Length: 433
Ligand SMILES: *Cc1c(COP(=O)(O)O)cnc(C)c1O
Image (cartoon, rainbow, N blue to C red):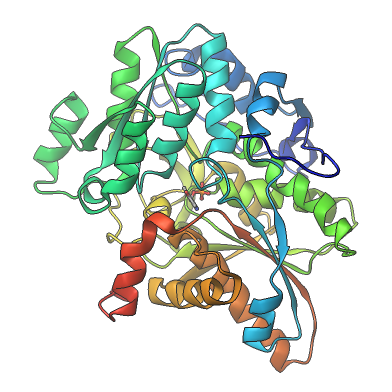
């Protein structure tokens, strides 16, 4: 797969680290036992040094290794489209653009981080990665990346989606991964969680506990997390950097609004952090809006405090907006958004007023997704529908007010494998959770 361009466009050579530009420093992650700020040695059992350094880095630009850039070129730069037909369908005075991450090999932004994560682990001599996945996007992204670097991959998939959405499991297996429904009987954590929550449909927090346990036991294995952590947000900043350049090609300045969905916060961070930099440097006033599901509203309803990233308390303590690490969200379709917490960096930005948040109900999300699909031809991922719903509502308000803002939407993935959810919406059976 090689993309041919008349004019070979650039892809970013560095990741952008917002920490370097934040007016106030984010709170450090804490050791779960001592409650002291983490030191690198605390994390070496599950992460390679390359990623540990990035997790704690305050360097503004971090070079993307050539080997990673080469893989990025399989699908990057991702397209920025003007949504003219959506504008027409809405009869809006707003100009709407969307950055589409659904053209990656697995159909979402997740490969932007899975590839560097596999790369740094390979560099550290690891041969196996373990992880969790909800709807399967992260599992598929890591299965792809481990395959690229000749490593093996063990994925714990939230039981509810393992059963209900078999196609991404098949995709992971096609890339060579081993997939186990979580909570499972294969780990101590999984057995304990099943005792505590009999008949549970699982959660990301539970699956993380199982994946970490497996990684800690095998010296050749590391754990990989698909969202939330600083290094994941960092890797995703290729999205926003490209968008800044692409808007110039369209003759636009900075947008007035930026909408992205937020589960663990990584695609929102990736698109918005380069724009937050523009705001902080006084070049723009981009109104950045995190669109979270009403079923897991960590920013709009959660508390800002230290909490664990998983259900069993195995991760470091992260300062974040959280619904509590034992929160099990309703089984809404946007599996990638069913998480109790939120990236500490995104949480910090929200707390400091650098971005705001709205909660979107799933029927409103799918109504917007269908409008988008019929206008633009692209069926958005169920997660991405939340961002589109936020943007559509904003465009309608702008039209009523006689304003013509520029609205940028992060469409984090393709919904081709979410079609059963669309079908449920179309037959009227979808819960309005
Ligand atoms: C995983 C996923 C999300 C949610 O994760 P974030 O870390 O919040 O980006 C959103 N959209 C898609 C397509 C996903 O696969």
